[in-house]
Image (tube, rainbow, N blue to C red; front, side, top):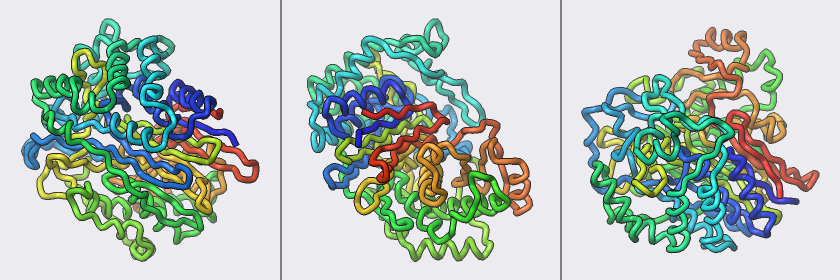
Length: 536
């Protein structure tokens, strides 16, 4: 069995596969791929970001959690009086001036550098300098633009990726040419980023969190009204723990704790396990599909209701984790669904970024890594000369005090990022995860049931039609869901929003499936994002 890398960025996947070919293990390849992703997807991830890695190495299963943390200058009520709305589809509060979306006030302490270093130190065989070299080289020599980097804002989103690339002088210099975007097929060179990563490679993560680079970052952030201090960077630590698990039709599913979305995935699977999903003709769009979509949507709302009510950073809030993995709690939700009760997700008001990225690696020895990392959707802020964009993780904090996800110094905010591994007899069977903002959990769970319940190949599973209904009572469906099914759902009392795109906009799942019959790995890269699957 050969190793495999699956991710949205072909240039990063190729770099990871080179590591496997040279004898590196799954963590080596994951770290190299992640740094390369930060070069070619500058608004999705990078050294200014954060994430979580689920690792299965030589039978040991660990989560390496490097969530971003709020700066010590924040206060719980600082944005209380400037809230305007909550976007329906991605858990973002819209504030006056969009201060939580773009600019220096939206930045939290980045965790990616220390998180990837921790993973490599614990499980890798490459040196830290070796792991950064491919990304340094790519940033210095230039990388090919494969799709449009920046897009204008489309309501209800008020700040587009183009606004963020153009926010800072360095952003305009590096990522725009005479004020316009680079076209697909053209090359972008980022010497500043190459130099920054070279220093991080040579000096180690302390240079980023405690050294000269840290001082330069904080000086810029402070001068521009941000909430981080040098002490915040100095104090940053990675959280390492064993993953949470549940069973689903004989398989063991492992994922991450809050503030990520893993427990929501496990609860949703627990609820769905009580239904015979394989009886529904999902791919054939048979006569029972309206009932199937209704069932999925109610289960999604149930899991989301618990997440919104209880989910938060466990370091600050006593989260009832056992509730989310309880089969008894799942049965209670099924009883309510079967009774015809309409599940309501509690929200501040009916209106509520999908720029995250993900990668999966398995090596020839069966070791597996599922890594989701992000900038949220990117603040647009770049410290002059450093070449990387900071995260805008403050965007998904609740701007009202006294709630589980409210703002607090050192606190991480909720996210749906949920790297996941499904085990069969304690061996990896599926390795998967997704970018997609508020639509990650629904996408991952639908991929799992597509394989286990509907007997799809892994590519069929990630490419199949998808629905989403986590945040409101509206069911989002793609253009591939026929109108006659939508009309049936409306007659059942559902509100349907049909998107014109056949493959979007939903979470974009990337996955590896172990085909034991043929002793090989099969990969699925979601066509919604145009990713890549490569074997060594």
